[in-house]
Length: 310
Image 1 (cartoon, one colour):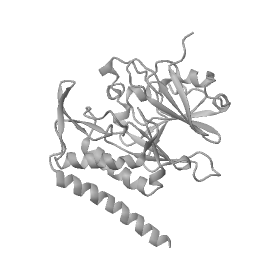
Image 2 (cartoon, one colour):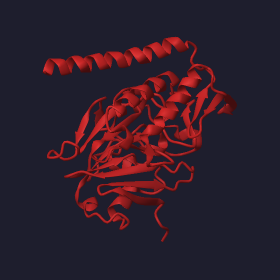
Image 3 (cartoon, one colour):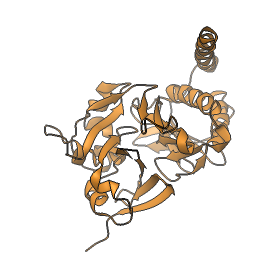
Image 4 (cartoon, one colour):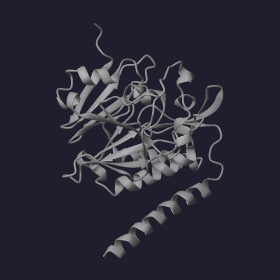
């Protein structure tokens, strides 16, 4: 009998990651968080083999709660290498699996997310993604309580459009972790050249994410990426922001590359690489002003709320 194409690694007492060895060499990283009364599954991979069966039968994760507790499935975005196993938990046109509490996705652009299978990109690589049913939409700022008795045992939802319109991140203050999906990862191209990607939105999301994380324990936070690295220092985002600024100011060197018949630009720093389509930012000053003013409004609202509560 062949070994399952999953490799599980414990990161913290209640947090694991699972890497899938798939035929597309995506090697998506999925995450498991053991909450008090249920289990959070962040992404479900490519579907090389049944992720659900693996979780219910594996002895690589020696925790009996896998068999007894229900699963809360959360997609960081709807690309095929992150939603491939969704149908096992919540199949289209059928009841949810008895072990599935909900299948969740970011609600910023539901039409995009539900445009299956076009926006999953499965057709571009010859993958087959089974249809599924989202049973819960997550809003920006939503808080998922993992343990009512511990205020740090939460997941806070952040909408991070850019790579896709429905991309989200999840902040887990208990272990100073941020689950980022494909919003960021090192040493490989962050894809902003796709049909539904948006470089301007990515810049705004990165700026707001940096401000959010800096308001937390920034130097202690580790970013759990959807590929390559599950232990990226949040402080590395400063380097990514510097690269983005250089791109916007047209001071970054780039290499030209044809991807799916479309001209793209590749911009690199020591750790990060951006793959952007040929139609780059045309009005740099306007974008910078928009990003800065958006954060300033958020800061003033927060400041006024604090003053009122005092």
